[in-house]
Amino acid sequence: MEKPVVVYEPFRAGLPPMREYMPSLWSRRTFIAEFSRSELREQNYGSIFGQLWLVLNPLLLSGVYFLLIYVIGGSSDAIRFGHLTASLFLFYLIANSLTGGVKAITSGQRLILNTSFPRIMLPISATVIALFKFIPTLFVFVIIHAVIGLPYSWQMLWAIPILLIALIMALGMAILISCINVYFRDISSMLPYLTRSLLYLSPILYEASSVSDRIRTLEIANPIFYLLDAWSRVVVHAEAPSMNSLLHATAWALFIFLTGTYFFLARERDFAVRL
Amino acid sequence: MKDLGLTYTTSIDKKPTLKARLKTLGRGKKHTRIVRALNDVSIDVHYGTVLGIIGSNGAGKSSLMRVISGIVPPTQGRVEVFGSVSTLLALGVGFNPSMTGRDNVYLGGLAAGMSREEIDASFDSIAEFSELGESIDAPMRTYSSGMYARLAFSVAAVVEPDILIIDEALSTGDAKFKEKSLNRIKELRTADRALILVSHALATIEDICNEVIWLNKGKLMMRGNPSDVIAAYREFVDARKSASSDEDV
Image (cartoon, rainbow over all chains, first blue to last red):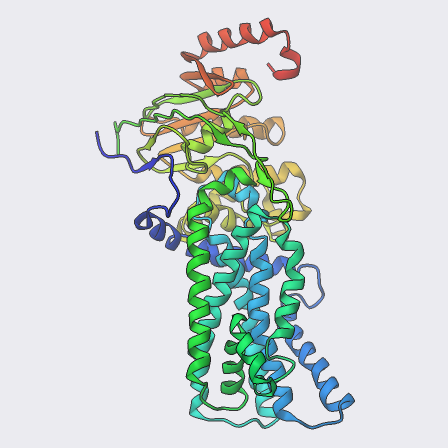
């Protein structure tokens, strides 16, 4: 008799066999894309502008800050406006990934209970959706950048590795929080406060350089503080990021991604009976 | 892959329950309850077999299906699967109501593990089988539940796996479509495929299956040819005098 194609056995704690898991995840990539696309469309379903909201959202958001800084504030601080929009757009990539990820598993109940597939696909979709929402904001920022006359330089290419770090961080957070939410459903209710705190604790409404040294040291505990600082330095000031902030951001991103993935993979076979 | 043996050997014990979860972070108290959904069940299903599974509610039928299809890992024993498995445990899994029927054919097909090319190739037959006509391009939230079920079954029916597991999916749509889907299942009965069917409709089981197992409270009560097992099961149900609440015989 030929060897069995698949064997299911009781599992002990630890990771599932990666040699089977990874190809199975890779073979589902079209589903991830299609699933994310349909979820995204669902979010804007029934609105007059539909998918146009993906561009309208960042435009309106920057409009609000334009009003705040230029009109009400009466200043013409282009750097401040650029910093605010650029940092906020990147922050939303991470925040959207978190808010999408938190319910990725619990709302995918029907799928999980009735089909066998790598569960990590669901939080990955949440990050893909966040990325889909982020891409139009990049274009909006490019226009803002040109209109308000911010400087350009080759150092701006640093934006690419910084974006990659941000994506790993966003993905890691989505994976981790989706897994935690299976066991502690309260996380989804606490999340708005968590993201709000993250917003105020990170250099978005202010620049990292305006914070005292003591606070800056404390901010080592904030995973996105130095990431956002590096991002603003590169895309707004057109300067190279400091190596310290890059290292800090990379270390946090890898830490969150690796621990999140480990917990998720070790626990995912348990999800079907926990939902 | 003809004449290939297909062996399932499951013997499962102790399974964390669906309701076992931590309610609150603050309380830190674990509410778990242990349910023995399946208890030392050993069966083997060979290609060419259409296996019916019967039993009252909570007998472990769905758990068995989920273990075989790899959705829930067993806590004891071993499942060996020789071939590709497709599960039809619920209709319309992966469907998104705000998308059109056409988009959902792709979504459902991809969720079932098909590739985009495979769906492209069988799209026309899916659309035809579902008898939706023009409505296939309307959003699914405008569908009636019958139309929804018809499309869902059509997507599932074109997947041609080595092993097909169907749970209660037959009871969809109107009488005409029911017959059509039943016929499709009969078509899928070939020597190089194994079908596993869970249903409360004993007449259907007797009609389609060539082997039946009867589960009760997670234990395998009987296995054999359909008429014998169903007769024994009916006798058992009558004896418990709860037939009316349990079965739609």
